[in-house]
Image (cartoon, rainbow, N blue to C red):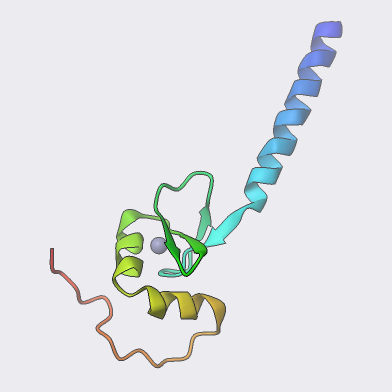
Amino acid sequence: MFRQLRLAGLKLRQAVQIKEKNMAMQTDPVCGMQVDDQKTTAKSQFQGTNYYFCSDECKRKFDQQPQQYASKAGRAQSGGGSGQQGGGSKR
Ligand SMILES: [Zn+2]
């Protein structure tokens, strides 16, 4: 009986922790996906702000043109991109 109670308490605590973790979702500025900043390893810092990415590929794109993506993240998208998008196959 007491054991069950204790277990239930533990589960509750875990649930709360998971909930808190889920709150910390970040938006990938490159593709717009929701990224869990606790899980992802693809992070970058630009002008004192942390950015999180769904994959290393998005991080690489961001690192190439951080200004472009950082400004996009804050504002609504205005189609003013004069760069090549999605065509880069250089490695
Ligand atoms: Zn992405």
